Image (cartoon, rainbow, N blue to C red; front, side, top):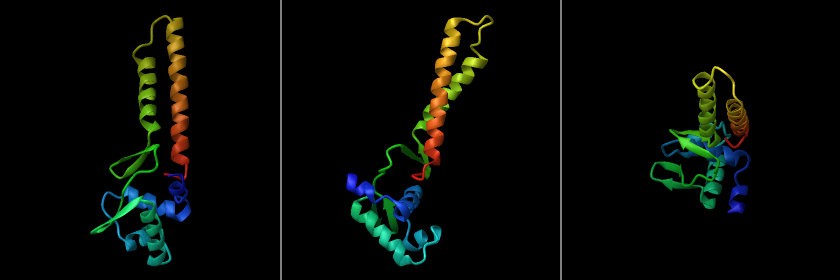
Length: 138
């Protein structure tokens, strides 16, 4: 398994991402045009590498992703989203709710503590999500 993950580098990773993001099977020419490759042979070379490693499979109309190897990503309508994104949305929403709706008239230690905990958790989650979005794996 670790050896097959080593295949996902450079242009092969770009080809895999392109096939993974598409909901429908893609052909060799589509891959070549979308990624501005010099020839269909180059696209076929990388597709064959991915097929031999078991990342994609050939269907009647082209190639589709056979398995999602990028564990920290979720595919939603052809868009790859970091798993942390959902935690970030929950924590930021909780923080807003805490500040806007649950703010007491007199600040208490409990409120300040909960505000601090949720703020740190939200900031950490936002940082991790931004880091995942900026990585070249997406």
